[in-house]
Structures are given as C-alpha cells and as structure tokens.
Length: 173
Image 1 (cartoon, one colour):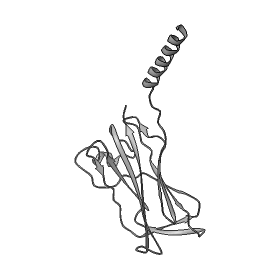
Image 2 (cartoon, rainbow, N blue to C red):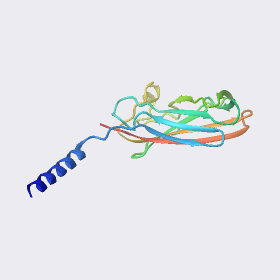
Image 3 (tube, rainbow, N blue to C red):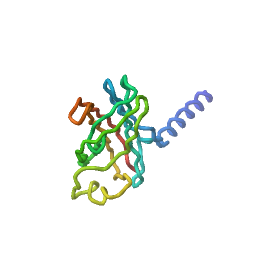
Image 4 (spheres, helix red, strand yellow):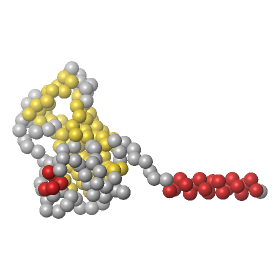
C-alpha cells in the first residue's frame, strides 16, 4: 500500500512539474511549391520576447529541369505581409514594380530576408517609426508572416508563377 501511495505521489509531482515548465521555442517553417519552384518561409523560433528583433526569411529554390532559370519580378521576387491574429493590425506589403531579373541555379536556394513595405499608418505598430527602424520588432500578440512569390518566366508579363507560404509566431513575455 505504501509503494502504491509513493508511486501515486511521484506521478502527481511529475505531472505538476510538467505543467509549470515553459514551452521552448521551436523553429517555424512552412512551404509551397509548383512544378518549378519551392518557397520556404522560416523563423528560427516560433516564440519571440517582446521588444527583441524577430528573424524571418524566405528561401526560393528552382527545382526545374534546366541548370538555371531567369525569373522576372518587381523590386523583389518575394513580398511580405504581416497579420495580427489576435488584433486588427495588418502590414499589407507592397513594392516598386520595375521589371528586374534574377538568375537562379537549380538546387541552390536563394535567401530573402523579411522586408518592411506598405502604407504608413497613423496607429502602432505600423507607423513611420516602425518602418524606419531596421530591426523587426512587434508588440505582444500572435502574428502571421506571409511570403508571396510573384515571378514570371521569359520576360515581365511572361509565364506567371505565384506561391504563398506563411508562419505564425508568438511575441510575448
């Protein structure tokens, strides 16, 4: 009877400890692909302390039959959006529309860090000061980072390829 009681206390004690331990951040990764391209969005951690810089980036991989491919795009092949999942804030993104090109080697991913873009709002967090700061910082909350690939082959306005992938991150204490 005593062994059963001790074993029961040990199980209860272990359960209580498991509930109070903080959840460790894990990498956040999402991907989308078509017949030629793979778009991967990554953040080293799915949780970030309030006030600390957040690292989010996209990787673009050409996985087609040729050794290389030239893609045509606006100022970047990737544009970004941020959506607050537990509030109203949205950075809708946007970019200049010149016709630029980038050569991609098959099997060699090209990295595109998150870039702030869009309309400056009068309310935080997406105000002028936020856009002017180099680091990406967000207030506490749940945030979705959406990377959209928008390219064409052959020339601007040629064969279109569009992909979208997103990761959800938590910012908080």
